[in-house]
Image (tube, rainbow, N blue to C red; front, side, top):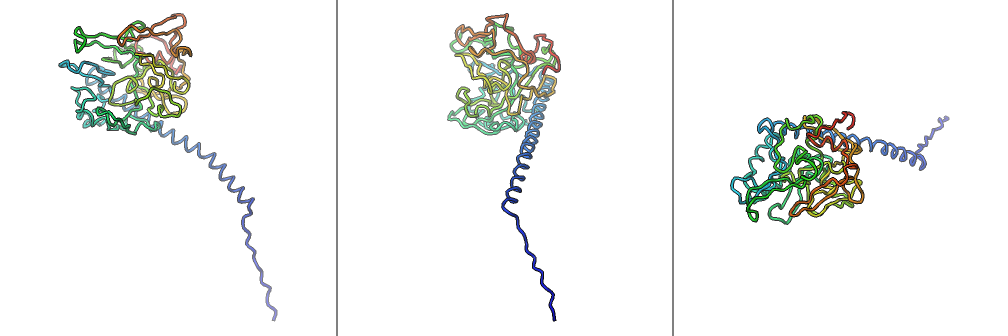
Length: 361
């Protein structure tokens, strides 16, 4: 009997070349998809940041409904003066009741310095509405050896104080100053307090004569830029939400948006003018979010028209400083012919009367 011949099937595997081709194709696909995934994640973080700023702007409007004015950017006073609100209370604590943080608000003792022992515990409380998801260190606590602020929580947002910092205050008699003290770093240039927040400010919406939709109320102030390699900001920790100090919860438009990318810091003795801690900044590509006084939030590009910075002084062209004594380094227009505000400076002030096109920013 003749048996049928068996057929032997030989299984064929991948050759090395084919395997390498497949791996290469997978690598190309990952390279193409990864930026898209990262871009989608950043878009989600930016959307959350926008929502945070809308909540902050809404809280400011609710505050005005309750108290008629915006809160002061910072309170400053002698600790021993009866009835006088003492140092470093900023705007952010005042917004807490309007962002569902009543318990935290009630834990603050507003009758003493923000850094007295009675207020130590609140400094270590992070508030999610106060920080941007793209800001890598904003949600982290910083450790300090000081007994007054052992651990500090941060914010990614700050109130707009106008074109440059000014330490304007008027104090009753106190220790070392029997006749009181009046001081302004800003007096030799323009009228004081051109932004919405400043020391002892009390701005109403009626004071914003340039229009609520044309005036910046809050801007991003990324805490994480001070942690970047090569960061040259002064040593220290900034962006504390409990503090009203410049560099913590107040910024200016003296330097362009994301100035840390192109401008080294400048800190003349007695003046608060560091480019890294005083300017609006973010980790969003190309610009930063800003809340306008009408409650809307806009993404403004870092390339928006801004006054030119003189590389020799690291100040706006035409602007200089003069030291007039105790805490009185002031900004002085040295050359009115070259001193020019840009669009960014125009929308950071509340009543200078500039005409700015809606598509200019």
